[in-house]
Length: 220
Image (tube, rainbow, N blue to C red; front, side):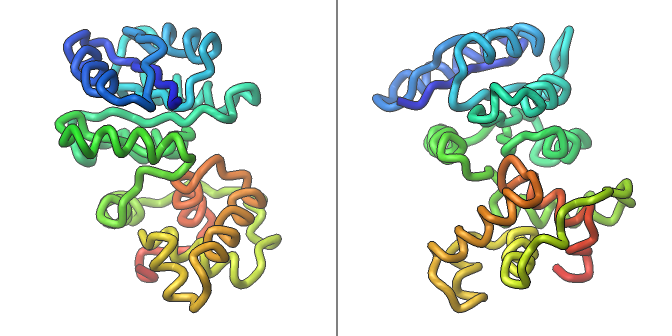
């Protein structure tokens, strides 16, 4: 059973998402919160698999709530997915840096929404190649702050190659084809790189790849 926490200050939005998720036999909405502070408290109480959280909320906003969840060792299994009204707004990259596993637009097709919840629960990032490319085009041209001791030196050449391809928006199957390896081996390279770089998930791996200088816009 996939356990979900809904955090949004608009009751109608929460009700709509809950109605969709309640139709699924393998998904349970364990609680709802109207602001980030309530969301944090309920996350600690229920330990959901997935927290769906709005960016702009009173008391504690979604980015700060995400940052606090990601920083809590007791909440490592929790996957935070940001809800946004726009396909790409100014807060998305900040949310990914804070530790979000990805983001969803609130007008998403219902079937895609339910699928996304399952993807997040598996620990996979909600960063489709098209979304990753938008991130690259809109944000990566901006200067990143220096990142000290990223751990890049610990990566093998194959792990570095895999991370580069992840940052370009390729799926595991596409990475396997490009590297001429099996999808399982590709996933192993990615998982080991995440461990060495202390990335919570694939989304953070993309951010780290750019912030560290491993990948630059001209590489994509």
